[in-house]
Structures are given as C-alpha cells and as structure tokens.
Length: 218
Length: 218
DNA sequence: AATAGAAGTGAGTAATCACTTTTTTTGAAG
DNA sequence: CTTCAAAAAAAGTGATTACTCACTTCTATT
Image (cartoon, rainbow over all chains, first blue to last red; front, side):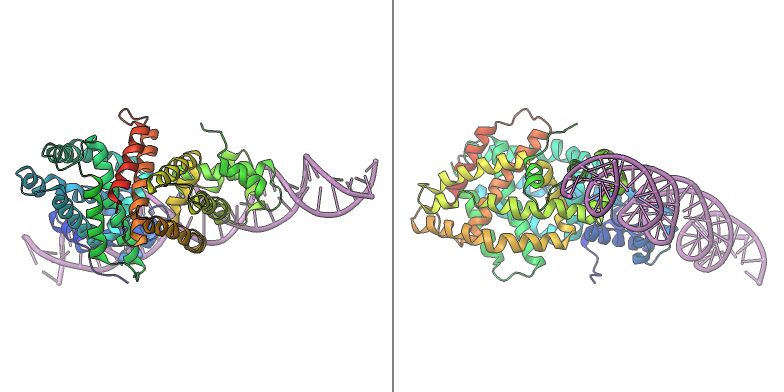
C-alpha cells in the first residue's frame, strides 16, 4: 500500500550503531507498519515476518524479543522527535534571533509539523503504545525532563523578561502553548487521513499562532 | 485496588435493556478495568473471568465474543453518556444564561472535568481503543456529528454575533477551545496520577479560561 | 412440590502465540 | 572446486488464546 520508507527509517539504517542488512530494514519497516495499523499487542511476529518477506526465525536472530522490535523503533523516535528542541533554534532564540514569541512559535510549529507529517506511522505507534510500556515512558521522561524542559522554560522566561509574554508560571505557558500546537497537529493528521474538504492548512496555522500570541500577550 | 463503581457503570446496570445480574456487572467492571490497564488486545478472557470472580464460560453466556464485551462498554458510553453530557449547558446558553464566552467556558470546563475524572477508566478505554475499532469510530461520528456539532457551532456563532468572540471560522474556534480545555484536563489527569507537587488546580483553570477568552477576543 | 428455563460452570478444543532448535543456503577465502 | 561459518529458512516447542459444550445450580411461576 505505502512502500515509501519514512525518513526515520533511512536514518536508522545508516546512523545506528552497526550496519543493518536489507532484511533487518524490511523487518523494522514491516513491524512499524503493522504496529501502527493494528497496535503492538495485536501484531504477531509471524505476520511481521511474512510482510517483511522473511522467515519468522530471522526476526529473532536480530531482535531477541518482540518487545525489542518495538524499542528499536521507538527509542530513536523519541529522541528524533525532541532533538530539535536541543539544537539550533534554541541558541538562535537566546541570541535574540526571534523578535517575538509569535515568530518563535511559527518556527517551532512548522518544524515539528513537518517532522510528524513525514513520520506519521512512527508517531502513531509512539502515541498508541506509550500508555502501555513503562520503559517507553521512562525513556521519554529521561530525555524530556532534564534536557528539553529546562531549555523551553528558559526561552519562555526570556520572552517574559523582554515583556513580550504574559507573566504566568512558565510551566503554565508551556502547557497552553503545547496544547494549542498539539491540537493543530492532530487536526492536521485527522484532516489528512480523510482528505478533508474544509481544512485550509496555512490559514489554520496562522489562526493558531495568532491565537496563542494573543492569548499569551502580557 | 479500586473497587468503586464509576457512574457510567451504574447507569449501564439500570438504564440498559433488560436487567443485569450481579455477575454480569462484575464481568463488565472487570473488563473495563483490565482494558484500561493493559489495553483490549492484551487482556485475556481468562483474566477477566478470574478478576470478576466468575468462570470463563460465564462470560460467553452473556457476550458472544470478546469484542462484544468491548462494544457493550463503549457503545452506550458514546450514545447515552457522551452526547447528552456534551450538550448539557446548551439550552442555558441559547437562553442567554451566560453573558460572555468566558463564563460559558468556565461552566463547560469545570463540569466536564468532573465528569471525566469520575469516569477515568471509561475514557481511557475509549481513547485507547478508538483508533483500532472502526465500529467505534463510526458510532462516534454518527452520534456526535449530527447531534453535538451543530449545537456547538450555533453557540459559537451566537457569541460571534454578539461581538464577544473573534470572527474566525466557527470550526477553528471550536478546535482552539477544545484543545485548550483538553490540555487542561490531560494535565489534571496526569497530575492526579502522580500526585504532583506544583499543580494548583484552580489557578490553572483560571489561567486556561483567561487564556482562551483573551486569545479568542474579537 | 414440580417444572421450566435462565444462569453458571469448568474441562476441553483447535488455533495461534512468542520463541527455539535444526536444517539449508549463501558467499567469500583458500 | 572445497571449506566453513554466518545468515536465513524451516520445522518444531510448550504455553496461551478465544471460544464451545455437556452439564449442574439457581430462580421464579404454577
């Protein structure tokens, strides 16, 4: 149905520790595909094998357990999803590259939306399986809490100090901003899923950004 | 662990067609419990039976398949609980009981939060299983789209006509409002789950309402 | 008290599960 | 061509799955 490899898979093939054979890649792709479609628990290793065009035993040569498959997929996903918050944009922000919170929001929203759109299946697996796998939750917390969160809070405080952001508790600002952007991204994905009629991509993005900026103005 | 019956279950026991025996109720309660905890696919009928204190065969006397069990839980939840609940304040609104969008929001948010908190497990099951069961999706669409959505939009239009709400497309206003409230509810649930330290319930609610009102002002 | 039907039981079923062990294929060095 | 180890495929393994069935127990009406 959909045979294009999503960017995250390409990266996993090259970037990961050690090389991956073609069959390993097919196994991972088939697993991610099935997990997104039917969920982890309802996807059998035999079906993964047959979809990958591989014998079932081959899966267990490379991945000790079925859960290993999930973790191989999900672990880099969490990092890739959050990575940009650790990198370029933030130094730019701290060096006053963005004039107002609104500009910063626009940059972040478009950046993350693009990533998520390009890696829809991966994102779906992550969202669906996170509630059931404590290892994944811990992994998410461990990268989010010490690495991402302080950066985000310091950016918020900077805009507050400059007087371009309401003097609410930074965590509250973060929650309000995040829910606005997540709402946009979810609507985008749902609209894309059922090739919706009334969804004007750029207009909705602009409305969302403007709404956030106005709601969080000092 | 948690033996209190949630309100939705009580309603199912009495309101449904035909009476339910005590064991049927225990089966439903155990199933909802397990589904919320481990997900539908990972919950075995044998475990449901043992948690309900019932022989496994008893389950299948009343519910033809395991999926029947899920639908028995989820279908009335959508029809009898979700839809009326979403519509609760609407008559008040159309009779000008609320002066401004802000007041309306406050009423919606507080009692919606209460409802969801009281029926946490039901909501968890619904949210988690919706992506995998087309019957449920269809059910939700058929109930919510024609019943709830027009009402919501007409309320939004009314406030827009009165000049107390930004003249954005009503669906956009709905999305922005919903994501703000959902963000608050999710934060509330997460905070409740890990009895969080820095979560000031009323302050967060007020901040959220004020944020929405300000962001959506004309 | 007798009877009928609904409710409940638990051993049993074939199928499927994640995973293991054995056999075959492959591909490059000698 | 032979050799041989790694990789893949094939053929298992016991455990668990959703579900059935012959049967017993409860309950309500006469």
